[in-house]
Amino acid sequence: MKRNLSLLLVLAMLLLALTGCTSTEVRSYSEDAAAENEDVFANALTAYPSDKQVGTINGTPVYWNEYAYNLAYYGSQMANYSEDGTVDWSAVYDEDSGETYGQLLQESAIQGLKQYHIIEAKAAEYGVEFGDEGEAFVQDMVDQTREGMLGEEATEEDLAEALRTNYYVDMDVMRYQGKIQYLYDGLFAEIFGENGEKVTDEEVAEFIQESGYLHAKHILWQVTDEEGNELSEAEKQSQLQKAQAAAAELQAITDQKAREARFDEIMKAESQDPGLEYYPDGYVFGTGEMYEEFETGAAALEEYQVSDVVTTAAGYHVILRLPLDGDTVIDQDTDGKDITVRYAAASQNFNALADGWVEEAEVVWENGFDNLDLDKVFQAKSGGFFQKLLGK
Image (tube, rainbow, N blue to C red; front, side, top):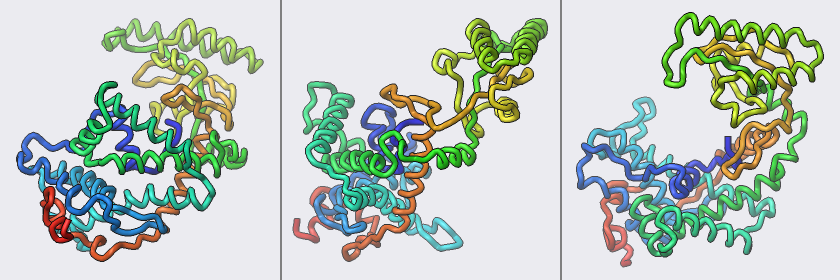
């Protein structure tokens, strides 16, 4: 889990790609796709002037460059699932509703737009300002992206070209989405606190109950060697006996603090868990994140209780159930800052709140932009059909 668990799926995809967390570019076609189709979605960027206002979302203006980016991104993703990299926009996608692929694309693009325009509108409503600090945040994002993608010697003009070529994004859209990330963080802090400190203990307890989170340490005796080869039956039996002996010893200790202290001693001396170095204080996990047998074994324990030997594909486990509250650390973000249960609860609550905002968002389109001729949009070239129509 990472901090700032944003509902901004489009923004998240873009920023992850730009900051080097993924090397996947927007344009990822199958090798069999026809070469002449590879640039078709980029044509959307020139179908209208980039600063052409196409509508509003809760009163915030929407411009063609950002709408075109969403159309190109989602359109390219849909094309990835076809054999030749093309999509018949008039073909029916849903037989029950009669919805076409073109309608699906526009709905997806509009949803993407709503997800970040609603943050701008709500930030204004809650008094979250952008200002000089926000400008500096966006510039830092631009600089890091430029250096990360192209190197220190690259210019912003180089970045602008790379963005348009590989991601269908112009600099204005990138800066706008950086602004939204800044406002998102500020809005989150305003409502729930920067680290979720405004979330009550009752809300945290409800989150723990609903999420099924558990907190546990374990000692693992593996049933494979360092190369992943299965141990012999005799070696497995030896590992099992070690686990059984440890469980018996720990269960015999009645004092909770003494039991945990001895558990830690055995864990450090004998555990073969490869994650021990990174999670010395145990794991916080939800349903489906661990082996089913491990989760069942941990859930059956009371706090500070030690399990019998639990067998999974990884080997033999002895588990110590630990308490879980708002201050328990789940993970760390990319900067090494702790993510607590309270922060996770705040993130879930904020995403639910934002989902409601998006659902209720009012979209007002300029004439025709809610029902585009996608064939013409994706056929447009520099100075293409709509540019000429507008005399641009």
